[in-house]
Image: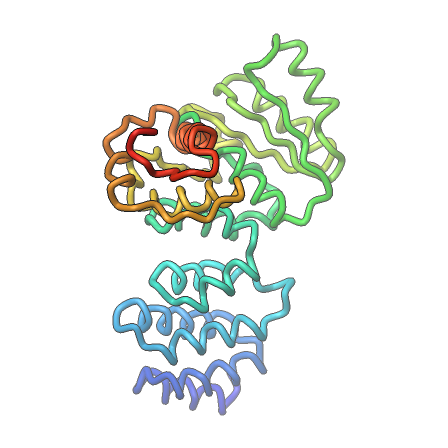
Length: 297
């Protein structure tokens, strides 16, 4: 290790000071000490989360900004942590640098973990299994992973839509060369394994969306798993979800607490898709009026 780097590391470990971290990050970048830089950034993120040390967050953002865009994805979880902990600039930078991940809305731990895994695994070729109840957003996350992967095309097929023979034909037709195939609502039978074989033959990436538990699938499909939680387990995300789903309909209202309390009292058997349909109905009923008028609920 470079002598100046060793000295900078000793100084930082003794002080854990932001200025010493800045010096160490500069020296680490010069010699390519990525593991050490990652440790420093992790400590800076902890400083922000625990004590809201603004210079620590600013140093993280400036370091990520200097990172070449092709290598920036590995820093997405750090920026996500700052954004979810209330750093306004980090929220904007996350949307700017990682728009595909920013569209996967939620600050609850399970959603942060889903984005973290998506960022980590998107550039890799292995298959990904997305599990969770119907309506939690399997396809939405699959699209984000595909976009982050840089692959040229996304093919889709629905495992339960047609007879097995026709699905086999669809696999051949829908799997893009060097692209991504999303297999929706797959049961843990031979079809996902067959889809994996077709993808390997065409150098494509397979993403499977399923309502079954991961341990029911073949090991080749259950090594990289992202589990999406049901809506009833992430009610803290309701304000963000409502604002985002309304924004996609061209509306900018902020839901009042009375409306959010009403939503928390419902069952949401269809999860986020159910919420999306519910808001769509309210928009139709309200037209240009008050979307949150109790008589519409």
